Image (tube, rainbow, N blue to C red; front, side, top):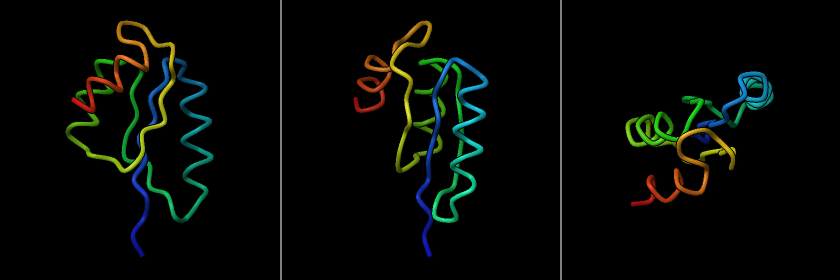
Length: 73
């Protein structure tokens, strides 16, 4: 069975940790990475190539919308 590879991006460590903990409880999901800001998210997502990115819209530096545009470009 192929697991869904998920990346979590949020500037609040507690929120990130909670999401990752919940996602890891599901056997069909594999959390492949996480980041605290837009620039780190772009860098890591391009390297890790997850199936899904769970993105906070309000992050320092690059917000979630800018980050999504950068990843899609």
